[in-house]
Length: 103
Length: 156
Image 1 (cartoon, chains in turn orange, green):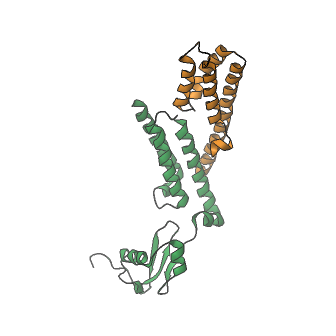
Image 2 (spheres, chains in turn cyan, purple):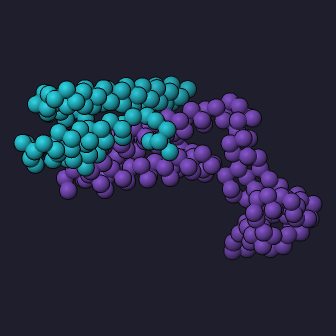
Image 3 (cartoon, chains in turn blue, red):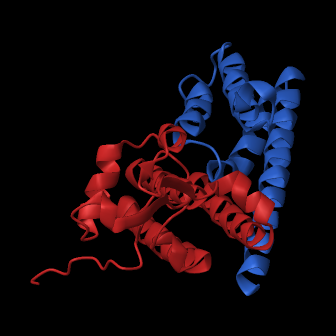
């Protein structure tokens, strides 16, 4: 019975933690995308730098590196914003719980 | 390299704790859900250990979830006969009263040769010494002797 209670608590924790975390990461990504769309690239970059460590705990290194490289390679590049936006979208879409991701 | 070593240690500790939580059945005779869980756990643990690109939590969280589900399923199986039958099936009688039960052999995908081999392993030289052979839920065969018979012991 003790093991059952421990297992139930662990299962509940995992489900809630995963759901909340996915929601948080999607929210952060949406905020960054909104800043980019409003032309506030520096604010978007600052927010990314601030949340990068947290996001890196749950997202593959390749996707994190893609977001980093998108703006580091060419700071004055006009396409940097769109590359950065695409990489953030990729992270958001990967974390989102939707039919296409599951299947 | 240090990352891989540290991850291996973390997963070793976690797997040991999860096996402890799931009980001795996991390392003894396994039923279907237990076998699935064991295979899944080992596969889940290996990926983050060998690929440092994968976050540690990508292995930890599924591992915790599957272990917990297994404990809960085991508890439900213990409490509900119907659920136990649905998940693990029923024992199947393969040989009884001197005859192989062909429909059950087909159902279990077992041949008469397999049954005879299992009887020999259990110390019975001939099938007429055996009362019945049952395929248990764990996949092992139980060979029950006729009341007048005893299996031949090694060295006798």
